[in-house]
Amino acid sequence: MKTEELLIAATLASWERATTRLDKAFSACTDEDLEREIAPGSNRLRYLLGHLTAVHDRMLPLLDLGARAYPHLDIYLDQADRSFEETVTPAALRQAWSDVNARLAAGFATLQAGQWLERHTSVSPEDFAKEPLRNRFSVLLSRTNHAWSHFGQVAILHLEK
Amino acid sequence: MKTEELLIAATLASWERATTRLDKAFSACTDEDLEREIAPGSNRLRYLLGHLTAVHDRMLPLLDLGARAYPHLDIYLDQADRSFEETVTPAALRQAWSDVNARLAAGFATLQAGQWLERHTSVSPEDFAKEPLRNRFSVLLSRTNHAWSHFGQVAILHLEK
Image (cartoon, rainbow over all chains, first blue to last red; front, side):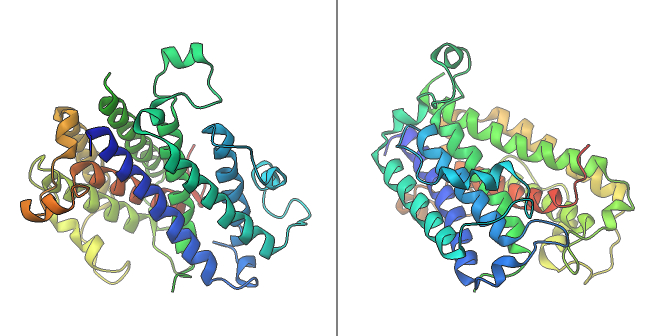
């Protein structure tokens, strides 16, 4: 493998570790467990599942890998936990989470190393010329960090089997 | 910048964001705040500060960037919170945290892109030949993820000003 291919392979492995760890924790939860809070007054697991799914779903158009599949989950980004009426069932949330991560994995597999250095879709060509770090790779890193930060919270509840 | 230089610059920026966010949170804490738990029965901030400092300190020899400066902080890795008598003052913990991160930043600045693909010091040349992802770059990624996972916990307390 060439240098850039090794760097991208390592970074993709780091993304996959985050989603796999989260997946194990959410899979170990019953639907009742999803109502548990990370800490008193903090977000419930159910909210974090919706929130992470919405963030990952938005990565599809941001990385130019396809249209969003679950835009109605943006309520888990735009609104605080418990501030809205939840119409999405736990089963539907779980299914969306798995589906979005599978779509991302399939999309990632189509990208050549050089394409990770291309601009993401929310930066204009003009701005990208000035700020070359606003590329797909930086989105992958920041969303990996986001996933790990919430994994750290989920881990407080010791759900992983 | 060449492709691999851009990838490494983005990854170093991601590490720096993690340490900067943690730094802001710890700086916003009084020494009394450091006694606060993330959640009931969970780790105290003081323990996380010691734990993160020990993990970062161990990166120095692991990345072949120098000797460890604070090996006595390994107790924050080897023992659970509240299971040992703490002899390190909050001021000394804070100083070690800043110092270790500064040493790492200085070390990172000496590395050329290709050197990030070299093996880390806990893998043998023979094993590295079979597993080329066991390199400095993977250590940087995994420790960045580690830092973000604990940042997610610290963020529960809303300490950042």
